Image (cartoon, rainbow, N blue to C red; front, top):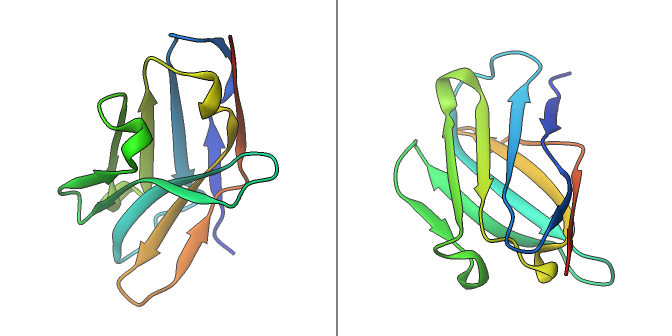
Length: 116
């Protein structure tokens, strides 16, 4: 069973930066989409950033200009650079990879806490 392993979460002051990393426990073939979701307490999980075929990325409006998604589908890795963090960015962040056959893989989640 392939697992996605996340790292990089933690506690940071508002205005600070964090870089989240996610890697498959082995190379997953056929990955054509990668993304990051987050879920804050009492809220639904939301898609923060996504990228298709290592190409153009899309972002939720609240993080545009502050977050950058990157990754390498051939290496089954995805990253999220988060800059100018705000308290409202506090959430558990989940990485996800999707194969061309429609199989979704999820990370275990990593806590990001931004203090004011």
